[in-house]
Length: 131
Image (spheres, rainbow, N blue to C red):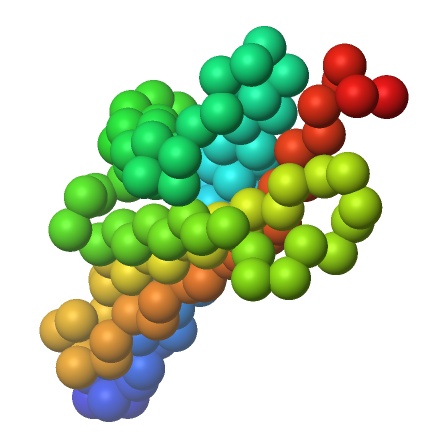
């Protein structure tokens, strides 16, 4: 019984650590999927003649993140949308989206902070009428 009392805290931390990794992977995949949704939305809007500003795309990304299926927490999410300084593809408008999310920590009782997950990608908007 004494041995279990000595090992129980380590076993609990390892078990919660495995759950923490699962939560981190789910949040990383949510960020990837969210940037894909924002990219799709921006491309469709651009091709219909609606040239959205970075602040409009930022608001769309934040609204999508707070709703289903992502259900992220607003105070843990940071969204940055900017036009690229250097346009890498001729005939396309490049926009950079970067998301940062601080995941919920299951290991707070052991003074282990949860990491912040970052994901970024470029969005290339091509006017289909110009082709």
